[in-house]
Image (cartoon, rainbow, N blue to C red):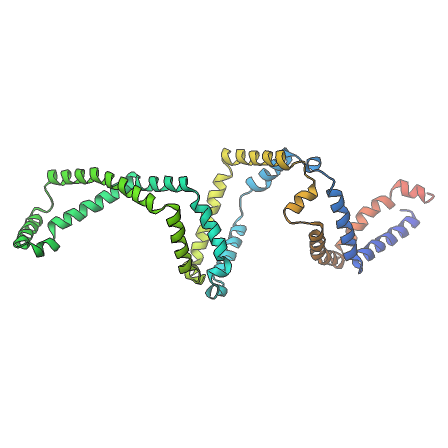
Length: 337
């Protein structure tokens, strides 16, 4: 390297380090951030990226990455810390969710009438539920026939008759098979009708005005409850299990054609509707105004640059890039060979 080039390299390196390490660093960050924002304010998103790049980026960095054990442990640990926070003992639900916000949520859920009707219908007409109710009715009738009941205390002689019947049942061990099957069949047929009636009653009971009234009463009951009323029942092992189950579900979902097709549709839709916006408009839409960016760049940039300088890493990287110029034939020629 030409002797003059060596001297210039040293001077240039010191100049850059002084600028970045001096009191003017904050102003430099502000100036460069403002200049970048001005440029981004005239730069359409479609000029710097497109559907394929964004989709592939998300596929590579979200859908194709398996959450590591360390990440799952961190999520579980932080969730456990939040659930065991001493503030849970003194913080009431209404401090986090006021009545107006609660009403907005409830009103939105209650407005889904068709979904509500379908859920009630699916539950009450489920064959397993019908069978369960049928079995309960059967055992109730059977117990009524076998055991003493209120009727035996009111009808003269009935108590003795029921005791006689009970003794016979105990000796027989169970109802006659034919009678038992007939009784079960009768109850099952009538249980279906009973469930139809139950569905109509439940649907009527869950009409919008009634649900709103119930929801308001429920809010009055729970608004003063402390958070630990719920969190105290959730143990660390429960949190870990939920995290693991969530990871298992996600690892399966992200590999399905449905997930990838949906991602593709979402990215296409975004670009069709907002792809012509400027980059700055997109940032502003998510709350990153130029002013906010300047603050955040300072907050993270100043301590980072200070550490880069103190460790010597920044000087080493500056020299690597400047040396390629000062050692070049062009620089040597400019300095007179």
